[in-house]
Image 1 (cartoon, helix red, strand yellow):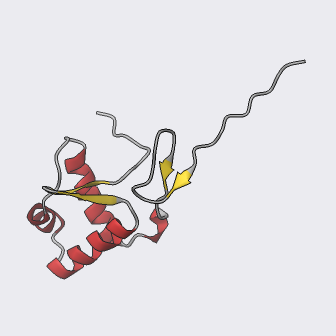
Image 2 (cartoon, rainbow, N blue to C red):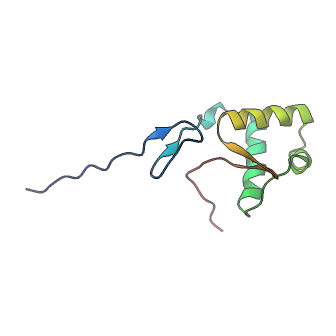
Length: 100
């Protein structure tokens, strides 16, 4: 008779409260608007190089009006998809990577 092993699932925690083996809870990406996705992709493009996206860069790159950009960033921050840093915006916790 073989012994079955059950792997403990990572525990979801509130944003900013994760520890080893825990995953921060994020909002569903299906709730993102086109503007949210445009801003997220711009942040992700910069983030994969190890840098942060500055507001002016995001405004220029996305072509969004400033109010729309601020609203998209606010929504992404609230959903824990993007985080703020002293220099700009970076991706929040995520479980994917980009092949190069």
